[in-house]
Image 1 (cartoon, rainbow, N blue to C red):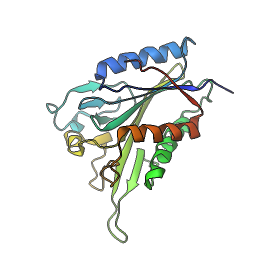
Image 2: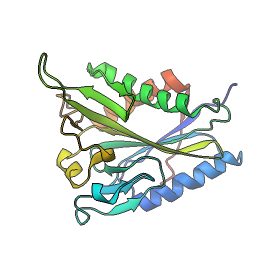
Image 3: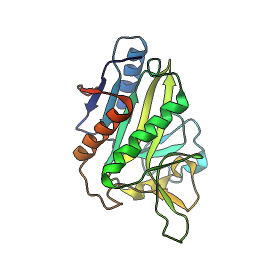
Image 4: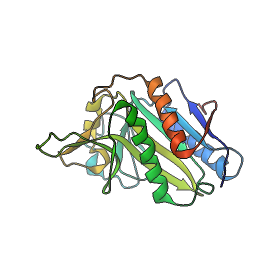
Length: 226
């Protein structure tokens, strides 16, 4: 089934998380009612932690470090902050096939293709959501770092929440939580800059857009909700 180009919006200033959540949910509802088109909204937040519907209290190791918000998405605790590109994904699965597994796989593919121009091999793991980079030394111990998190919710077959790609966040900020509930020391977090790619957010946005279009189809510029 054909559909119109997806709106593509970028907020230049950091957006307060409660405001972004309200705007995102309002847009998703409007899409479900047929009153608005699909939207990808790129932004940054001030440092904060979000708790998904599967979050465990013990995974919040420092509850006083940053504000904590209940996100209403799937998943556990995650971090958002400056230097991390958050992409809120408001797509209509009624016109994209009502297949949640395929949708999540396509979100992973979007991230994987975004990383390819930087010669970074992003990988899926069947028991660990998100996109991972294998940093094991040849013949050495297993070690993998997550470079992008995925947390999605569907309502009336319209998605909201989305992905968070680490461009240049302060990786020490992840220390206040057990990211996504994974405490195994073999698994950590990384970023484009941590992997030796000092790119700007604008450059990453351009790469993300091309990668998105290769997976999900055409986009068109749109004013950001906030």
